[in-house]
Image 1 (cartoon, rainbow, N blue to C red):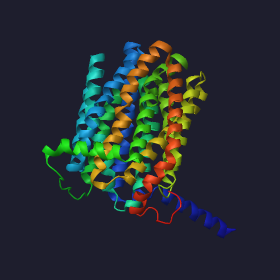
Image 2 (cartoon, rainbow, N blue to C red):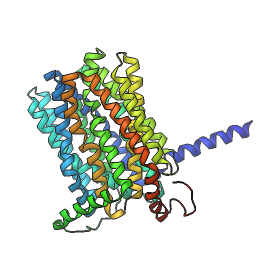
Image 3 (cartoon, rainbow, N blue to C red):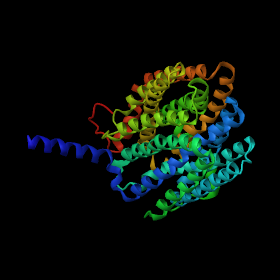
Length: 435
């Protein structure tokens, strides 16, 4: 009996080590801790900003407009940031972007605590933060591989990175909802500003081999063209980016409408909004941990459309819910599908992309994810004003399901085209039957 218990315990330890194996790398461990703290503040600011806008304006359209202004810079600047990420020191660039984001959070805090903030200032500050994030996100995504000494752990690092982001989504909005009730929105902006010190400190503590620039500033536009040609010319990359863009433009904007659901449909307050966001976070962490325990990227192509369907079904069901507890459960399911789809796409892209084009492809990933969402946010805000938030989210879910079906129909060809890349990178052998 003792032997069986010892075997069970060892099995559990092995599973835990498998799930968290990327944390054995010192640089990634530092980044994981610092970014986890910072992202809690980021999600607190996200909730506070949405509640502030809706409290000041009572307008679903302006909720969409603020979401649009904060993310639209990614559509135009993201690809340029990708070229820069392939040519400059990503580590140094991240310190700069995080510092600017901290300063913007401080400005937000000062304007809110003095009760002088107006809607145009929220739009302007959101746009400025969007510009910073346009550079930060693709640089950060392509920097992950520099923190991992063993490239076999890359997929695990990406999954843990997603766990970190959504663990913060679980904690941050819940704290924000309580804090807004107790003190007002301003404290969320202050906490976010202070939290950036953690990630900046973690970056400065890293031991990173200096990156030698691969090109000159005059070659940026040439590099930009090369990146687009590479992505559009290889169908597996193109198909993944198109599915991600579709889900982002029609599905992801549901988050900007959550204040409407929290107050007008579920008859709650900022704490209700925080717990809805927290439920998404629980689901997302669950999805990310599922990906983290996978030993290989093989078979992930099948998982992506299934996750997209789960996401779409969650949205459709949520759109008809008037029950607080049912809505929380549906947001959890939605979070699972959303995270597996996003992180799954990220993992496959980082696996099959050439190293010298990684920054540019990750910038296109960021553009498809973050750059499309603001357009969807604007459309969703406008549509919600016409047909209601419920029907808007319902239509979004239906379109996501349709997009997943189209992607699934292309899988046999995508596997055939990706197979030589998997063989070249040593992921599968030439005699392997599946990828």
